[in-house]
Amino acid sequence: MRLHSLFVAALAATVAFAASPSLAQDYPTKEIQGIIQWGAGGSTDTVMRAVTPKAEEVLGQSIVLQNVTGGVGAIGLNKVAGSDADGYTLLMGAENPLLYKVMGLGQKDYSDFVAIDILARGTPILVARPDAPYDTYEEMIAYIKDHPNEVKFGSTGPGGVPSVVTAMIENAEGELPVTFIPYDGDGPALTALQGAAIDVMPAVLGAAIEGVKAGKMKPLAIIAKEPVEQLPDVKPITEANDEFAKFLPWGPFFGIFAPKGTPEDAVTKLQDAFSQAANEDKFKELMQSRGFILMNVAGEEAEEFMQNWQSNTTWLLHDAGLTKKSPEEFGIKKPE
Image 1 (spheres, one colour):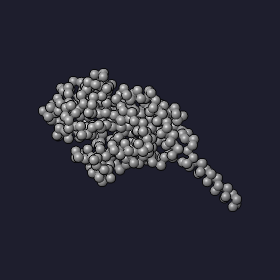
Image 2: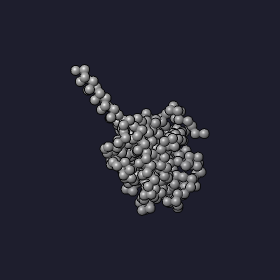
Image 3: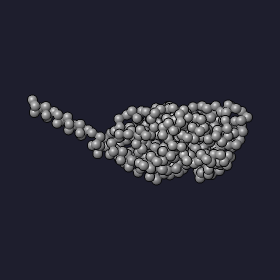
Image 4: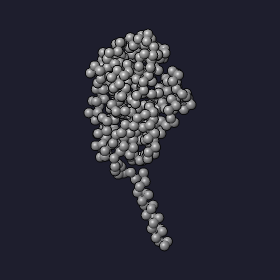
């Protein structure tokens, strides 16, 4: 009887040891879930669907992508945060989680994750429906002041690109009396813009550029200090008001994250796979043509980038009176 008990105990220990995260050398052995925290057709969706095929090839497993929207990306983030930290559920997200705490949207952010790869960052652009009664940023501001609350701005919720760009505009111009219409990402909002459901959208250049080139929306300004090579005739917003210069350069970013506690071997393999994918000529060409700036960083470099981004953006929003809590409460230092 004692011999039988010892055999059972040894067998159980062997099974547990073999199944432990430390023995993830064979990872991945099944398909991986990629949760995209924004809607189809937007910037995050575009970047993730472009980079994934090569990563699948390197890993030797399929990555099933799913758009999980809502809560300014918080629903997708919480879904991944609540999953097993085994490398089989990844968050394919944007910058928004770094604002959740100060915006009162949740207590989790990227400090609860491991950065697999910060793939790229984007440049914001202000676009309008083609038949809008203004052709420049200055004309838009004048029209808004003459027609308070008439102009409909697309929004992706607190902490989204539109909210940050709007904070910059209000800091530079004063109160902006417009009506905000919410959407689950810049993709659905830009579709609404083309259908005249809204009038103006602060979006990401990479998501808007094809519509601009096709004449389906008109560009009012690039939210940058210099023109961009993809749309050289569109003026940077600093030419209209140099008050914007103190906030720039600024833009969203797009990255892949795994829950903290994911086995080191799985993290290493994922980082290698997505690094190779982001370095592929096809992906780099798409990023360049769409106006995205390639980053392809992980580890300490990714952490430092996110820390600086969070500091600059949370304090910008706080100074504009748009946060629920001070960044100081969360140990986020004010930029010098």
